[in-house]
Length: 450
Image 1: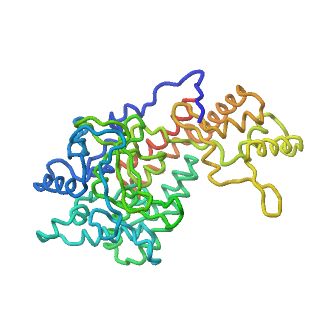
Image 2 (image 1 turned 45 degrees about the vertical axis):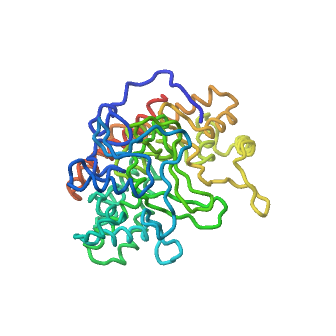
Image 3 (image 1 turned 90 degrees about the horizontal axis):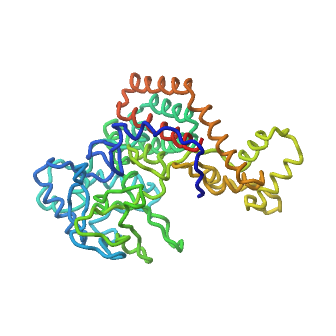
């Protein structure tokens, strides 16, 4: 990535003072019980302490359960000083290990999400537990999960609420966020086939709840040598770790042993006694948090606005900016040379050159703090022959997107969609505010570079 500083920076975002965001990391000011890793709210049950001690004891954890002094959100804290690279948790990935949920990847009838959701429901099914059952970590974990369904995607795709689903799709269209719409449509197609197998509305509701937990709490386990298909796992002790999108706050990381026998959490740097242990969310933009986590991190350097779908759209846009005719053969040759010089062409078997569109749209993005991806700058530098012109073109494009998607008429249209969501689908006002914040954060990214 390359950094571009705007000549005149606009006023600070109004979002920073919004009550929707916490003053610190990780999450909006939603109740702790629906935040990503907060399993229980302080004082909720008399046996919380026993549960906490049980989880820690059964996970070989060099940590203790505590609360953030500011947010009062549950987390894990170092019970002693920990050296960089030192192992904190070592959880077996064998199926018989009671400390982990693993998808049944051998069976063809269910995908990973359905497999894990069913496991959660089986462990949560009984309302009264025997003394022996209370000692089983998986049962304790499943019954400690928050009761609320998590994520806009799940709230749109269950309960036969087609109107809500269609309105949220319209919201993404109006925001120009085609990736988010495609992701929601893909998810709706997946869950509709799953839910049809369950039939009754009550069962569908339970299944939707379980899926929402699975999508926000799993880790993807991949075999670097390709010997086994990727699997997803849910690990109770790791779920108690809070996460951050701010790299400076992250002090622990995770990995899998080469033989895939164990999941390991280790210190990324030296960690002091009583310091909270924080994992990274990874490179996730706001879209993923909105759809599947149900909140937005207070800071997310991985958030982005797509400027062009692919290299051809970028080059054609620049050609039009220069006032050249779209059928100009000289420009066709220039664009071809540009793509070839930057390695944005690949050969077909028969020898013809075509564009490589794999993940191409994710290259042409603008991120917070006026951060432009390398591909955008390389393409514009190559076609213009001047770095200043490339930077100017980025600013022109950002202003163009602002005028096309964030004008007063667009704002009015968005508010009409929100009104329909409230009145026709009884969507929670908190979710409306989340959608509004999601859009406003994209507006702020564009404003920063102009």
